[in-house]
Length: 311
Image 1 (cartoon, rainbow, N blue to C red):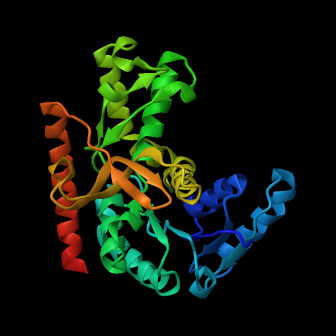
Image 2 (image 1 turned 120 degrees about the vertical axis):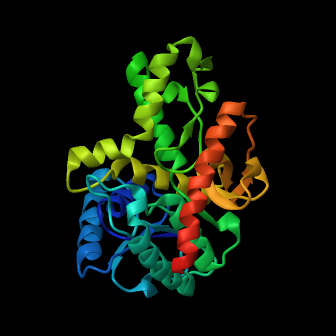
Image 3 (image 1 turned 90 degrees about the vertical axis):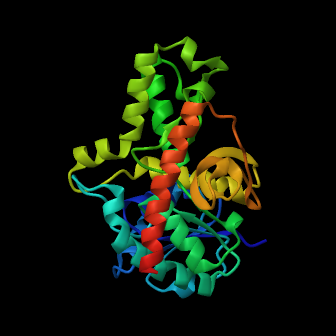
């Protein structure tokens, strides 16, 4: 029986690290593609040479040719310019719209039945670009954001409480940016509500740090942006699809009537399985939570409105 195939477009820090996470999970053979001659081939070979030490049996291909991606079960798009200090995710809109458009056209030509996982920023808008350009059913196009943002949120909570990150379950809504909406009410530690273990001011500080989690790393790195956590989140999504795990995860997914979003890609809890985004789960929100979510949706729609003018 042949292995599954996952192609990663972009062999920079996010793409190459994602390939590493996926290889460790032995989910599929991996194709890395990058327009820089030799970059994907070199990193792919290096990863392959690590497999005897890591103990994983996975095929690696590094290429500049989209033909090698043909027949992919999943394609993870990481292509695009990274953020630099002083830049917002929105600043990347024009350049990355062009890049993601070109990439998606090539991917669809060679893998018409694939699932698309978008990592490029600004995340919600680039997921919209991939969906519009591909013409795929909405369940087959999704963005990696909520898993990353909740991972940051959970990490900070674990640090504050001095407990294991594995015991923390959290949920988050909205766009991938400074107006994301963490939900302390739906956050628990081994079933214990977060609100019983931390004071409101402590929770608010963690929420604010989560919103600015990407910026914090950009400012520290100076010449790059986060890649370990984003790539791990994308790999978790790929695993949920290929293993049909029916995971309940926060992802950037298409919402029409759900949450009154009125047609946009935005972060919501979904059931992620063999059918891709199989269901959007609607939570009951307080008036304040709904207000924050609506503001986030409004911002996402501003960006997609600009995208429509570019496409």
